[in-house]
Image 1: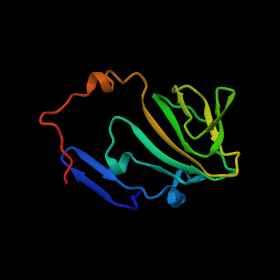
Image 2: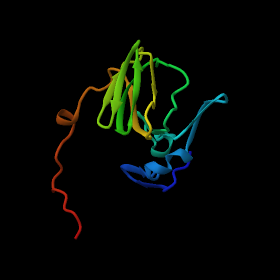
Image 3: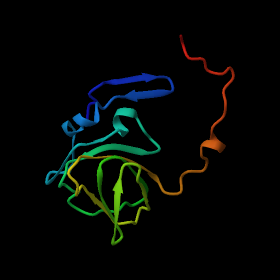
Length: 151
């Protein structure tokens, strides 16, 4: 799907602008003809991601993902940015809202809904389980000379 704000590329980066959260409903994800998810956009194609998948989503009040699902290889991290809802995982229902995060292993059966009166905003990051061999403190390194912001 085309990004509203376009895409900028450089040698070592790709940047995309999906638009404001309140316009996210313009995006529709349809994994099968019978399922349409307004308010969900995946960023892998726009950004050329090859080690993770990231999506942005807005769920309107009284709506839900119409089916529970699991993954074959990817763990997922759900980051709830604004609003309130419920997250189903392996028979347990968690209350989620702004600042909530939920990590789900591939075999975890998951589903979520917005049972509140306000929009539920969230980000989902997925990557192959067990593929993270380094993290910020062991993978990052300072560059010389240090970066200076332009005036």
